[in-house]
Length: 110
Image (cartoon, rainbow, N blue to C red; front, top):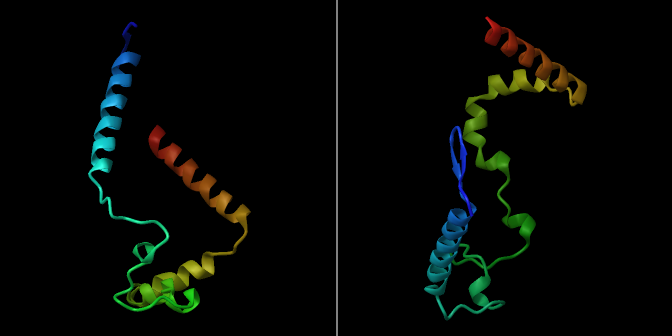
């Protein structure tokens, strides 16, 4: 094996194999120290819901509108502007992307 010298570092396949081997060994040792009393497909695999029994997933799901209510309410003016700009047409988004990219290229040249 030889070391490939580049302008920004070096590449040695044997060194990388050793690094991956040591990383795998560390991960294997850490995994081996895990709990041996874990049993798959038992009560241990159920989600902890603060002691409540799990029931219909539709009722258990916390919707994003509820989760971010305070954030969206405080930013309501900003969201109204964004909703008016949102057309759902991919051509509009590509046009905005091209315009912004052109502006960035012009700024870069200047």
